[in-house]
Image (cartoon, rainbow, N blue to C red; front, top):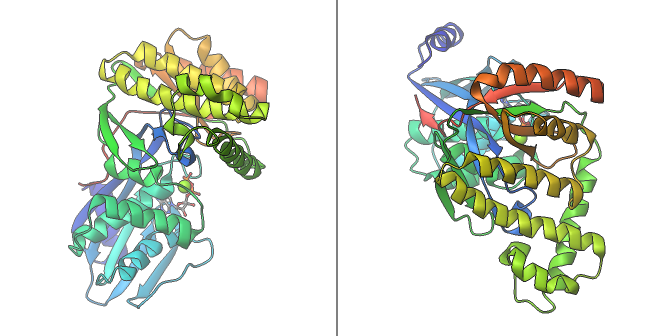
Length: 383
Ligand code: ADP
Ligand code: MG
């Protein structure tokens, strides 16, 4: 338990915390715009995360505090909880609501959150706070949920309680992540494999474009529809449920079934990207970061040229990375149009990389990016 957090907990609640939990944020290393096409993604947990300290109280009250937000909530035990505006404590409240929906008893609890996942940057601070809460409640009340059940409950929090229509990858990565490992997750079946992902003398640079969010949602829905059209066209001859049910070779033989040229490009991205994830898993197991880096660049090129979801900001970052000998590979991560890119950068060159990239990007784009570095850290745990 971190002593400074324990001190703050005691000052806030007049009693010491009895247990301390941690859940990380996540990045998706490769496999983009794949989740809604029933294919493979390869996320990992990062070393940024959310701490949660707890102690039961005898008053039957739930007290939520966060060192990152001013607002706080004291709420008595009740049969159901509803969302309160746009408050941060909706995330833990939504998790409590899930426990109630599963008929689990809750008892008064004091909770203090402190995170260092950059918020709203696409590193899933939301899944981090959801999973750390669910894991802590499960341990404290001995509710007996499996990790997968907690993941599914937290996805429901995000979809039903918060109202964000996202897939299951984020919660999955935060819960099942492991140090120096990535998770190859099949988004259709939820089968997963923990795979070696030693970064050797590299770090994971995470670069936020800081581009204001706009338009991305309609473009996102457009891509989802294009993939559905491609699937329908292919189903005229092929017995498949998802685009990712076929590999690139099969696609090459059957692409003529797709009438629209744009739709054809979208499908090619999805199917080749899915194959890239498979290759990535193998080359990582062999410790071949050079090839892994090439796959990152290839993924970005495909998202730029075939899927058309990158934009000037993300392209500028990857363009810069390509000029740097100390970078093995880079690509956009997340839905695109803005958000973050990742790059594999030699550890001892990171500071220089961050400085030069910031200068280059600011000159080209007109405002600064935010650059972080991370390793692949543990998934949710008690500390
Ligand atoms: P992202 O998941 O990309 O970081 P979201 O908008 O989905 O962005 O989730 C961010 C929200 O999650 C924050 O606005 C806040 O409500 C909640 N949150 C995340 N971390 C914390 C924290 N340490 N303390 C309190 N609330 C948090
Ligand atoms: Mg989120």
